[in-house]
Length: 299
Image (cartoon, rainbow, N blue to C red):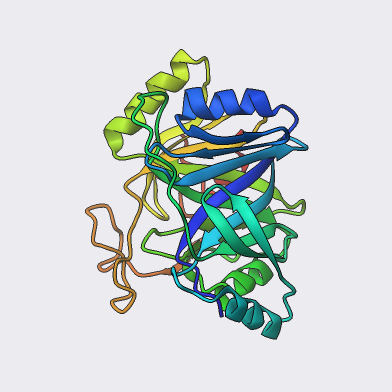
């Protein structure tokens, strides 16, 4: 089994790379660290690569990258994949920060890039846009949630943080409540990407900055019940649903098996569980529909 430690970057396709570079730099507040004829790589101000843009259809995820422990032998990881019947190949220069990786497909046909060593981009001290801390999670609609969850847990070492009924799974690879989400849909497609910001004050500033750029929220601000993060959502010009969040649940000790106690937790302690299908999607904020009905249909 591969023990993934963190979410790296997501590769999105777009019919207009320049327009999306402008959005991710001027609105989101990422830094352009490399620009090729048909490719752009963007990182946070602190140097974590977050988004790669390539030509293609809008609102589509083509690749997702994860880091394993530095010093890991990628050859041994490829051998571990082969035991699960997963064919992989070695690739070099995935991005400026990733010189070596193994690449393979997950059950939803997304390319997965796994790397061990990462070189941080140079810190950008400019103050532009919302300036998130990191790419926090990627959510995807799949037509077989259990099969996808089994792959990510049995092959990549993720842990299930929560289920909503049997159609919506939240998985973690580090202390954050979730780094990937999988929700049932007959048509597999990207659901949303999410960036973490420092705190609630940054959520408020993000709302103001989006409004000044004539970008309207499609949901939020509100506090989710599963994961308990405070979040806002909007869509960019490619119709990618983008979330900014803070205060997500943390499991800092896997041996303890519960998330750090918070005032809003319903259980004491709050452990991973299957939430009822009629669980509301938020404690407060816009909308009070059950998460399965409301969260999927947010425009």
